[in-house]
Amino acid sequence: YGYKSLEFITGEKVAAYYKYVWVVLVFFGSIASLGFVWNLSDAFNGLMILPNLIALVGLSGVVFKMLRDYENKYFRKVKE
Image 1 (cartoon, rainbow, N blue to C red):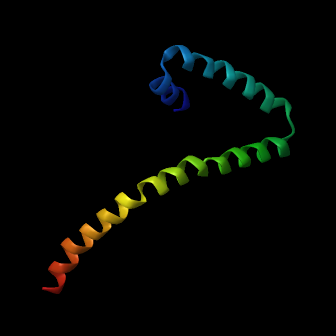
Image 2 (tube, rainbow, N blue to C red; image 1 turned 90 degrees about the horizontal axis):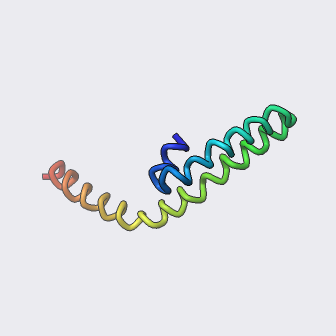
């Protein structure tokens, strides 16, 4: 998924380097200690919050507007 996503965003030439980086990281992961690999994995999984948080803040106005529209449309019918 990572390769295809990068290929879509940057094009095929840049995405080709992803394969090389992936092979190097697989090799590094095979010789590193298990604790270090898990800690590194946890750190990168934790960093995924940053783009999601930016998107949540950026879209919060749209989401609240849609929620108000939904509530006005469906809750008004129930009360009538």
